[in-house]
Structures are given as C-alpha cells and as structure tokens.
Length: 176
View: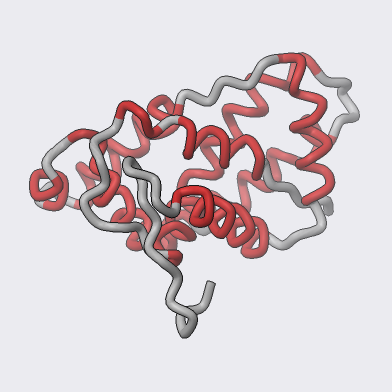
C-alpha cells in the first residue's frame, strides 16, 4: 500500500500560522515536535483531502491512498498525545501557560481537537493541489514513523529561532 505525507503543506501551515499566537515561553524539543506532528497530521490530511479532492482525478494518490495514511496516524494519536500536549502547552495559543497546564487532560485535548487545524489556517489553493498530490505520492513509500519524523525535523529546523514557536537547539546526544 502506498504511504504519504503532506510534509510541505504541514510545514507551511504550522510555521506560517503562528503569527497570531503568543510567543513561546520555552522551546519545543524534537520529541515534542514529533508528538505534535504525529497528533495533528491526520487532521491536516483530512483538510487537504477535503480541499483538493474535487480538484484531482479519481485515480490521484490524494483521493485513493491518503485516507489510509490518516487512519494509520489516528491509531497512533493516543500514544503521541503526551508529547503533543507538552508541545501544545508551550505554544499556548495566546493563553497563560499555567492556565493551559491546569486544564484537565480531557478538556485540553478537546480544545486541541476542536480548534488546532482551524488555528493553522491551512489555505491550499486549488491550483496547488496537483503539487500536494505529487509530494504526497513521492513520500508514500515512507513508513508512518518516517513520515512523522521527516515533517517534525523539518518543522524543528524551520522553527529554530522563531519567536512564536521556537524549537530547542538540538543536543547532539539527543535522537532526532
């Protein structure tokens, strides 16, 4: 079965959408970034399929294989949640970090699930759907873990030094 990632869309969406958020008080570790990506990527994929599905042929990878990747990722969301939560707390969405930390896990997860992809403001234009499909298909041979890792490392590098969503300097002893 083909596998995919919407790496380019996720990178642009996450890094480009932080302008309205409060400045990150502490940096996001590579492990937290991995957790964030593993947790939110199924929602991003859903939005991409919703946006681009009608603009691509029925045989396109986006219409035939992307849903299976999102389903695989959803099965791993519970395991990714603890690291994702830690990263989401650091991002803070404009709230006081202590207020966010004090929310129950269930309440916080509900807030994230209901609003994170909306906050990202994924804005894929129909004339770019073919490229998103091509990128997804090119990345399809990667495993789910490899896909998440590739996007997380890309986001970590892109966010290094960013005032809104700063990623931590990489410790050479720490696995990527």
